Length: 611
Ligand code: G6P
Image 1 (cartoon, rainbow, N blue to C red):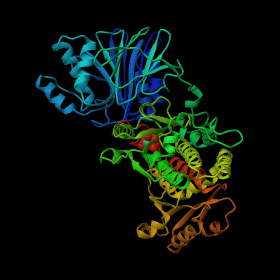
Image 2 (cartoon, rainbow, N blue to C red):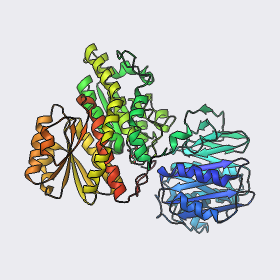
Image 3 (cartoon, rainbow, N blue to C red):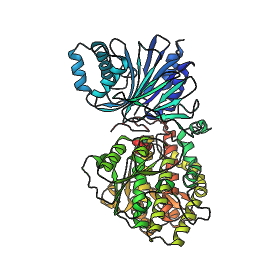
Image 4 (cartoon, protein in one colour):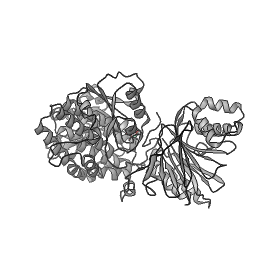
């Protein structure tokens, strides 16, 4: 993970880098640092957040017109000042910020130690800086040659920005596996892990590819491969507005993103649903839709919340397309020699488009001959660039580490795909197809209503904020919602929570139920409604405290449960989009009441670019 920002131009680099790092803190936030150069290069770093770094550098007047910064999510070495980036080589000739893992760092380190290098940190990055310096001095190479040669020797993943202290007019940037984007300005250039630190200065960007090496001056940009072949940079215009990455009056990004869901889902289907609701057009699937509709198996791969969306995808695809579906954790899929047959479709779901395990699983699936389709949010990220086709969710930047609008927009895309393919296969009739599209179009308005439980969720949070455990139950489409509700609670409030299929409760979790155990039952009306009423009775018989998510107007469960949070009625296939809203709000308020850092929970990161 980790976030990287670099700047070269005529403006004071310090402020640009600090502001940029604040935008990238979702990528990691256990230590931060920056290097500034005005001929002389100085490094500042500290344990803690970017704000701590800002306070530290505000005590000096040192600035520069070139620099680079880093916000870290520790992999090698505990989060402290020594292990924070930038990491410099022993003689100070190479200064490096790095996102990723150098897998053969131990071998390289031993080799360099044998040649007298004394390391001061536990990081793999310091090894890289010293390898460059070693090649530069001992091999009498230019900085560019030393960098290329060093990178040809390393195994692993990296997004790197490098300063050679003897070349104070340029930044070097290189990428393999971890994302880097260059912002092209007038007399200035930027480099960052994603476009969010760049968009307030320029909308013109270049996405680096694996094995690219960029040499960035303030008014010149040279792009090469690591084998020093010259490349022509492909400059793209991005459409990302600065307002989209501000809190806009909300106390946290997570709350803003929860409340943004009606708009986000509307953006997901906007332009993809015919005005008379008679059809869905997913432009990104134009060339593969026929192949998808004839596929013999669909394998969904994802991690975290996106995997929960994938589970809902399984229910949707099997119900409406009758194509067999498997849902896999990307990390498991890639390491167990999966069987991919001709005619299989692999669907990768990822908000960031950068999750290392999902990206590696995508590459593996393609190598094995599968058609690979992506569902991603971040435009231009690595997964959409590695897949055969795909659909963007258009949720807008999601900054809160706990995913909310990414989840509901992913489910929206999966529903559109399932309805469309089901219709193409003749399983979904014209009438059903049209009625489901009409229902989908009504979802933003219904979420708006579901958000009306915010005050009730806060009151409930006050009751349950001190609990140490919680159980979440659901059936059918609502089982993945239970998993997602439990994940939200544990991620941001550090309360242990488990999601379970409601019927499985009697095979274990029922033993945990007593008067102290909050049990959140996702029980909106669908085919399993009667069954879940029985499950609620079983909990009540054991004195569990039931918080039920119900369909508006439900009188039966309202009488049985201790607390209810109602959502509007919809069809079962879309019920997750509404039922998840109260669960997001409940975990948000509990975390706030417990004094947790909602947007940046401990140990987590938004974009997990290490495996
Ligand atoms: C991290 C994030 C989660 C996210 C998961 C997968 O763990 O904290 O919110 O669901 O990665 O991320 P992706 O970007 O692939 O959806």
